[in-house]
Image 1 (tube, rainbow, N blue to C red):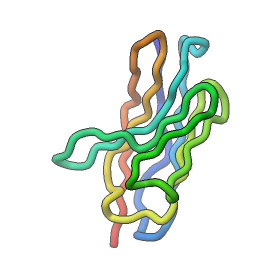
Image 2 (image 1 turned 135 degrees about the vertical axis):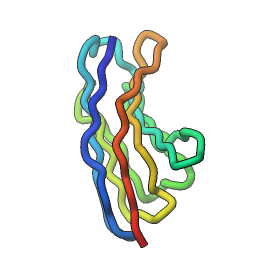
Image 3 (image 1 turned 120 degrees about the horizontal axis):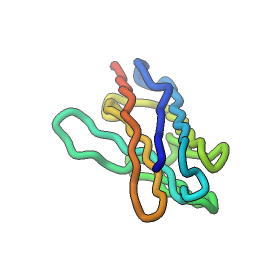
Image 4 (image 1 turned 180 degrees about the vertical axis):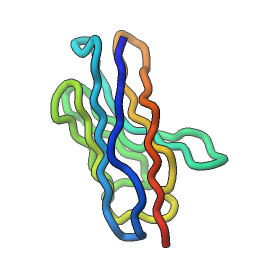
Length: 114
């Protein structure tokens, strides 16, 4: 079992930056990939960025060049979000893959105003 707790997020104006953090606890040795998804109101959850245990990253086209994901340790992942725009408004969820199962955090709201 893996538990995830997100922090960060909040309210920003367009063009500003915010950072998200996610800390895992539990069976940390089994975690491979970690990442961030987001779900805007009325839309499906979508991948934002992902990082595997080797440090290889993957980004959604909409955030490339603006967002950066990195792992501080096996159990902690961060997402730096720069040049935010209104389309980035969503609930952001941290995920971790361990033993073939995906675990989710509770989500944290990011709201970008014009």
